[in-house]
Structures are given as C-alpha cells and as structure tokens.
Image (tube, rainbow, N blue to C red; front, side, top):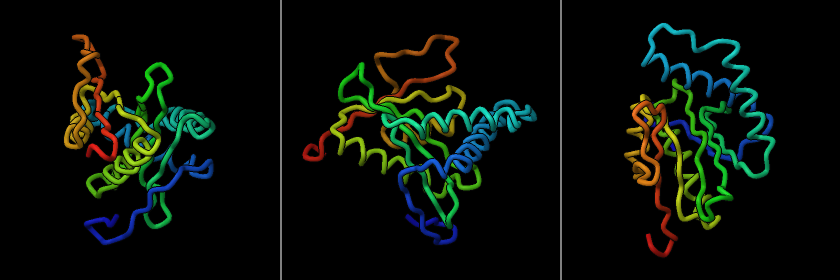
Length: 176
C-alpha cells in the first residue's frame, strides 16, 4: 500500500520481538494523542506510560496464541495490531490492539493493518470478530464503523461505560 502523501510503500508483516520498542513507543504516542483530545494538557506521554505499553506488548509478542502484525514504512514501524481467538466463543476472534503512530494517521496504515487482520481471521476460519473501543475515542469509532463494525447487540454499554463493544461478521470467502 502506498502513502497518498508521498508515495512510499507500506509493508504489513508479522511483528517480532525486535519490534517491541518501536511498537510500545507508537502505542504510547497514539494513546497520548487520543487522550489529549479529551483532556488537553494532561500528562499522558510519560515514562510510566511508555513502561506500561512496553510491558503490554512484551506479553503480546511473547504469546503464541496472540498473533501480532506491524506496519512498516521506510524501515520504521508505524502501526501494530494484535488479536486472540476466543476459546470461550468458537469462531470468534478479538482484536485487542490496533494502533497507528499519530504522524501516520490518515495515510492508510490502519486500513492496511485491518485488511491483513481480516485476511488472517478468515484464513483461520473465524466467523466473527469483536473489539472494545474507548467510548470517547470518536476517531477510532468512526474508523471501525466505516469498516463495517457495529455495536455488539449482546453487550450494551452501561450508562457510565468507558468502552463500546463492536462486532464484525466474517462471512466465508464463498459468501462474500
């Protein structure tokens, strides 16, 4: 996939332990950016936040049951995604991480990661995908809605909810 702004190619590949630092850094930056939109001036881009994201992704990259992808442009990791198959719900996969470096928002990185996830999920025989998105993250909610995700009818948010559960049907290739 090419960046519409400058024509540079984007590669989506399996994430590796060597990508840990870059993925943790971009996740912390994305987290800070969307939280700053709600709480301007709040200190979200802190060493503690970086350490937390590093620990989170270290666990993800160390698990065999949690496939992870990264998007690379010009030898720089600019996005990452991870999912896990739900043992409690056969045929269901959970997208529990999809983050793009804020400097690359709007360049197709998120869509490329999402497309690669869809391909892998269908190849694995998944029929349904689920995710939770922060309620106030309108940018992410619009992104997922634009890709066909809908509120999960089985998981209505509570009045004080911080997250919205979304679902996406994954029809088999012949049904598409």
